[in-house]
Image (cartoon, rainbow, N blue to C red; front, top):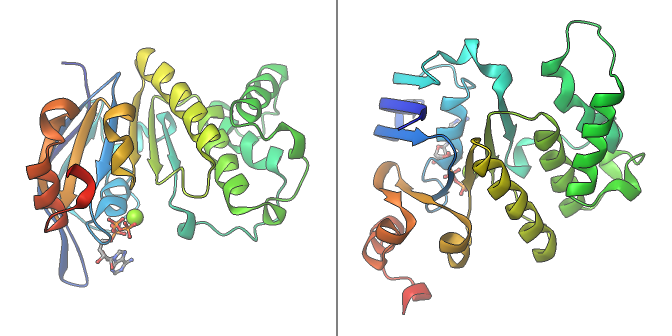
Length: 241
Ligand SMILES: Nc1ncnc2c1ncn2[C@@H]1O[C@H](COP(=O)(O)OP(=O)(O)OP(=O)(O)O)[C@@H](O)[C@H]1O
Ligand SMILES: [Mg+2]
């Protein structure tokens, strides 16, 4: 297996309250992973610990066999909507171009290659027509698409998307899923926190069911079962009936 991320004995607490306990997973390159679980299950916290954004956690996380500081440039992150300050004064194009920074040396300017990739990313999420608008002046779904475009523009090896489709219309969502599937086929690793259980089998290769503990993890066809979903959400969901 071509291991992309290896997590061993991960424990995370905030102010002594345990939020994630004893998580052990191996993420394989070239696959799309869905992460589901109820509110407060620790899904965003899992991303933040892998990305090295939390002050402390115990356990070992290796990405392509390296510690986070040696591989950060290869990771793209679309944070959950509420974690983003949308008042930040920048145009859509500015934000998308930020995806190119990891490819640049200090003060090196953008070239035609960077601009071509940014334009493609704008097109991929269909926001070309308002690329010169301030991000604060966009609708929620449009803002979300800007952040997805920034992640695509980064041409990262691993993409972390925290509820990327909140507020995004279904046509655009499906378009973006097709792009993510293509990236996975090229060998990239894609992790998506997602709430809509009806799409799990269609969108993801593997699924991670989380509720502070890892409830189940594996291939969608064998792991995304009624039993595991009921265990994760603490009761019966009408979804499988
Ligand atoms: N900075 C923080 N300080 C203290 N507690 C926090 C902090 N961030 C998250 N928590 C708590 O940790 C738990 C897990 O939060 P997390 O954001 O990871 O959940 P989630 O699964 O992403 O939920 P949601 O579906 O609502 O996005 C929750 O109980 C939350 O209240
Ligand atoms: Mg969250």
